[in-house]
Amino acid sequence: MRKKTWRWRGFEVSVPLPTRPAPDPSRLSPEELIQDGPIPELRTVSRQESIKKFDEGINELRSYADARPEREAATSLADRVTAMYWYHTIELPGGVVTGGMNDHRALVPSYGIPDDLKGKRVLDVGTWDGFWAFEFERRGAEVKAVDLDRFSRVDVPAAYRRRIESSGFDYVYGEGFEVAKNALGSKVDRIERNIYDLNPDDLGTFDLVHVADVLLHLEFPTRALQAVRSVTGGQAMLIMTFDPDLEGAGGHVVRYLGGWADTIWWIPSLRTNAQMILDAGFSSVRLHKTYRLVSLDGGTPLWRAVFFAQP
Image (cartoon, rainbow, N blue to C red; front, side, top):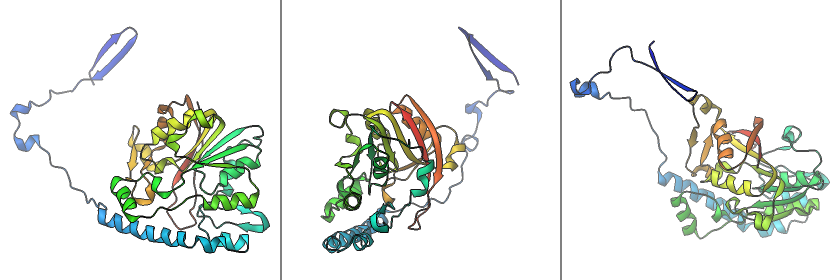
């Protein structure tokens, strides 16, 4: 194959030359210029389908919220825990274990957390029931945990947002965290804060910032990573979902889901996740582990990657 090479100040670029001249478009017929492609089957979820699913979810949340006085009136920790919805599986005193949708306990030994965190400040972002916050505290850290306080503050599409507002219902987050904190005698400070609003001016910086399973639920993940970078004094531990089937697609690619189902917006490739971390201002990123956690509610498990990033 023939090549043409350009050289300039030590740089060299070579491009292959065609073996025959390209066709002259003016001499081609319309049939030769336009090549029809196949039309694949493409199923889209209608807004009505999405709204129906939303209404069903709101009704479940409303019923759960209405039953809160009954849960609080439970005479034992075990009874109250059993009556609650839990995202995390957490071991509490007296042999009580929360029935979490996700059991992270088997991950702890290989998760990359320093064994000794005495004297360290740790921030757990998107703490939910607090599994990781309490684990950091158990290792000696001074821990602050941040999460949203209300359902109405989650990132959702505009039509979804209008549906939330028109429903007149707003679910309060943090019930499980408070129950677990009190049972454990924990001193973790839970702060109601959106990840986009993390700010060193009032929070300070942290030796370790932990963000797990948050970015897939955000409309603007890179903006969130910039906020995480602003409060990272030592290193950030970022657990991000990825789609291994995208790795062979080339470049930095993302599967876009739009925020309707389970408020999941994106599932990037592994390489895209790493690039977003760097683009948010971190100086370096290291991949520590990949894993897929079986969800106890029967949902399809997602692949996750544990990244360590330096500010």
